[in-house]
Amino acid sequence: MDEISRLKEIMVQLRDPQTGCPWDLKQDLSTLPPFILEEAYEVVDAIERNDTDDIRDELGDLLLQVVFSAQLASEDNKFDFEAIAKSISDKLVRRHPHVFGDEKFETDEQRAAFWEQSKIEERKEKQKSEGDTSILDSITVGLPSLSRAQKLQKRASKVGFDWQQIEPVFEKINEELQEVREASPEELEEEIGDLLFSVVNLSRHLKIDAEEALRKGNQKFMRRFQYIERQVEKNQFTLEQCSLEKLDQLWDQAKEAEKK
Image (cartoon, rainbow, N blue to C red; front, side):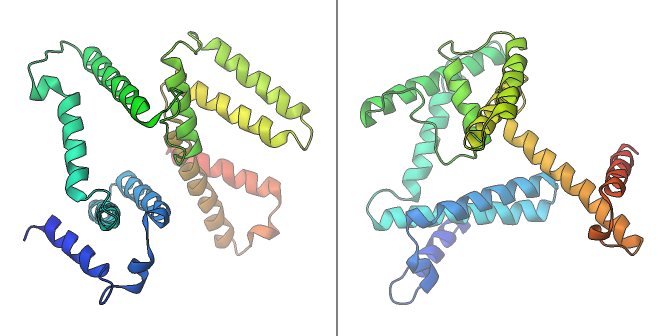
């Protein structure tokens, strides 16, 4: 038995009504999304740490979520693991006619243009079958908000709803920032949302992935704050005993230490 088949058989046993695991038996497709998201982020974290063993293990955890989802769907006679594999295999072949067909692309731009056009055609077919009326309908609601904002903006830009120059984007951010300054307490959440959406727009125009940028910003904050904690502990103080001025000095030291 190959390892994929073994994994699928293990999942079947875990879901056996008589001898399976009580926790696994309680699950359905609606309960899995939090685990799928968590495992996906743990894969990304392992890759960013360049930890080969963790990358392997976390990819295994993510694969388990695919197999688990397929088993649940199969029990409801919706689809199975083979249908998932067939769907992605068909899509890869369809979107790579230069590899699996006779199509010739001379540049990366031509390949990218074909890929985007293929996605557009697939969306049109899906809209016909599912009754979608907006070009934005197929963008997943469950995406992290920064990623979804970037995808919404990118999709709208495909039909010309976008600035062609970078300067209006900066101006929009300044406008939204001023509106935050002037907002009432009841308006603040909405205005902060508009400001964040505008910053994502700037990120997109600069060809920066907003989600990745913020993830790296979070990591930087953690490194520098943990440096502060180490220095405070070394001097036998607590964070609460330090003034903001002292903590700011240590923050600047952390920044300088990163440059060395």
